[in-house]
Image 1 (cartoon, helix red, strand yellow):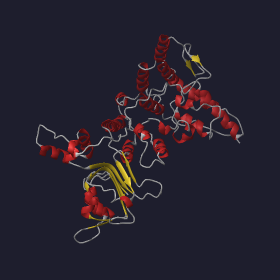
Image 2: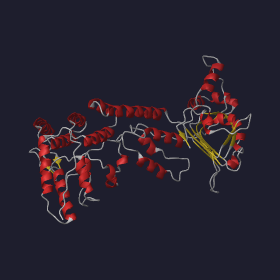
Image 3: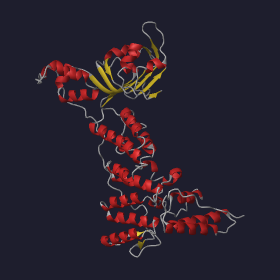
Image 4: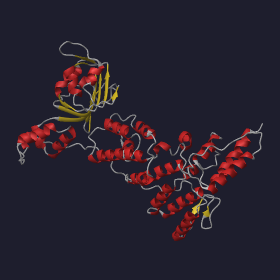
Length: 485
């Protein structure tokens, strides 16, 4: 029995170099010349020819897929980092990247699955005191899941996001839209948009990802060479060497490359088995070779430290503002919760005049662990067991972001607790096992901020006729809702 293997169709070579096409024809002829009745031996020879091609030329992604399809695992001695060196990203062959999962990279179209897994693993036993580092990392560059990550960050936080975090998220969100719009258009504008992120690692990974899909994009190659010229001349020479392995017939670039290599002075090693006179072939070349830029941390999550000094109305000094007290009261009352907190931090006068309790996250749910605390305060968040709901003596609560209220034993608990709520601006609302009137529910959700709502076994009735409201009537109170559970 004879086997007949054909090279895959090449879509990544839109304007191929003629000398490069000749090498591909030689590869096809060599594969056709393989004679073996043993399947394993036949495909072993096919893999050997692929590997030999990759040692002399930049191999297109279709050939890497063809190479990987001939075996479930490559030869154990074969360094898989050579795939990344050739700008090939594994996609369905993610099992190759156990130590460097593709979802951890900053490629704009990659789902952030890995970060979310890390977040869940790190916080499985943390209660509501979450480690948000893995989420923060994904908010510092444009990506396809940035809105979902921001939602999760807001939901899992226990205090108001800093101005820097909000501004960075908004900037990266806008840049994501801009980069995606330019993806199919002008390459220079697309590259410039990448540079606006101000993250070299982000630029490197997205440029190499795009080059891997379009190896003959000369303008992008030249922009990438210029990028490295200003950062690392040795890495610039590595990119030049790859360019010449996809355009072997372009002598002008080869001459330019040779001049730059002579300027650099120090000999640079390369993996190619067909080195130019000014190159050095290194049989033990480290394919994980590019110098990873220093990670740029724009911000980190700051925990709000508890205040250990106390004050009373007796030691408050009246403030002399350059305008009427009534105006200050109006400004304070109209302000959103994050701004109210800044007022309260700035001067104790505001708290004496407006003694409200600002709460970023308010969670009422059963605590089953007998040894666990029934009431927990952390930053601007509180969680407590329903049995302590009225023992905690809450007054004038202002809830800003998360409201989670589930009391199985008492369906009227929320109805009785609502008078203690001065204002609720929550985006994420979850209510379980409660009976409410329309007016009572509207106090929680009428602000128009609600984006995520879950009503589990909740009965909402009209005060006048006692008729139970339909879900569509309830949703009229939440014009900005995006998720209903």
